[in-house]
Amino acid sequence: MTGLSASLYAADPLRLEQEIVAVAPYVESFHLDIMDGLFAPEYGLSGRLVGDVRRVTDRPLDVHLMVADPRGAIVRYAEAGVRSIAVHIEGGSDLVEAAAIVRANGGRLMAAIRHTTPVARLQDVADTVDGILFMTAPLGGGAFDQHAFSRLAQRPRHLPTTVDGRIDASHFRQLTDLGVDLAVMGAALFAEGRAAELARQHAAELAGHGSASKARS
Image (cartoon, rainbow, N blue to C red):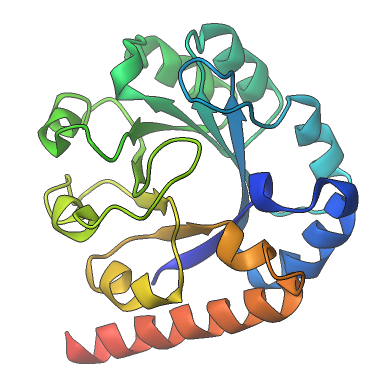
C-alpha cells in the first residue's frame, strides 16, 4: 500500500514546527530536500534541520541529496541517524561506498533518478542500493512529468520505490496500481495553509486506493 511522506521544503519556514505537528499523525515520514544551487537550480534545506525536526516528531526522516559533491553530506546525514539517503545516479558518486556508509549507520541508500534520465540506468545499480527515489518533475520545481507513469512501469520492481515531484491526489490510483511504496507531497499538502486537513484527506484517499487495488488483484 502506498504511504504518504511530507516534503518540508514546501512547508512554511516561519511555522515549521506547527506544520510538522499538524501533519505528523497522517504521514509515514518527512522528506528533506538538500540542494546546493549547483546540481539543482535552487537552494534547499540545511543540515541542522534534522536535529530540529527530531525534537518535534518521531517520524522517520528521508534525505534527498541534490548536491554536486555528495560525499561529505552522505557521511553527515548518515551519522545524524536519518532513515534513508537518496543519491543521484547522474552525479557519478560511488554508490557502493555510499551504501556501506549509510548502512553502517543503520540507514538505507536510495538511488535517485531525474525525470529525464533513462530508466534503464537503474539496472546498473539495482544490486547496490536499497530502493529508488523516482523524480516525477524537474529538480527544484516544475510541472509533473507526463511520462512518469510509463517510466515507473519500467523500473526494477523488486526495489522499494518513492516518487517525488508535483504529486497530487489525481495520481494516487496509478501510483498504487504501479506498486509505489511512498508518495512525497509538498505544495499539494502545505500550500493552502490547511496542512492537517489535507494530510488527513490524502492519507485516507491513498488507503482507499490501496484497498481497491488489492481487491482488483
